Image 1 (cartoon, rainbow, N blue to C red):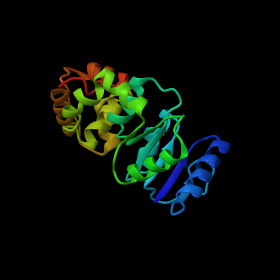
Image 2 (cartoon, one colour; image 1 turned 45 degrees about the vertical axis):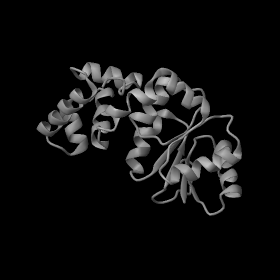
Image 3 (cartoon, rainbow, N blue to C red; image 1 turned 180 degrees about the vertical axis):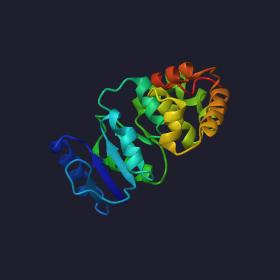
Image 4 (tube, one colour; image 1 turned 90 degrees about the horizontal axis):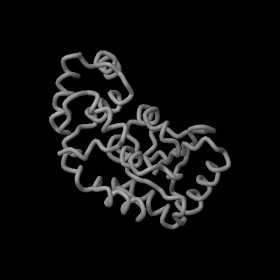
Length: 199
């Protein structure tokens, strides 16, 4: 298993790498900020929500685990549903379960601490949106992210190397799937992290 740590605090990054090295010794590790890095990581551990788009572009095949430091529930939902993050680690998780989370995510499973799972279930996000979410392709999710970032159809087409009619066709299907009527509604849902509430 190859793990890349993307934590811009050197002390915290070294601590995480030390824990992994002692408890999951078969792991090859890299550091996104302080180097050396690792090519084609299986897992990227990150702490800043703002980094997810860049990380996903740089490490296309990787699975992502987010260290929660008090993120609001709608943003956690957006990380899971819009960005395809497979793990959310609570700040009070013990070392044994942290290592277990690494292995589970590496196998393609989703890891949520109990408090995050309860939070999502209480909002109805985890279950009510799953049907609509699974209809969205990775390309659809990327388009939603770019719409939420304020990009025009032409800008999206340029960034994704697709034609303008193809982007319009994707958006039409996304609107129907999520039950929205226009870009503004789609952006609002994505920004709130609740793009899956519509069926």
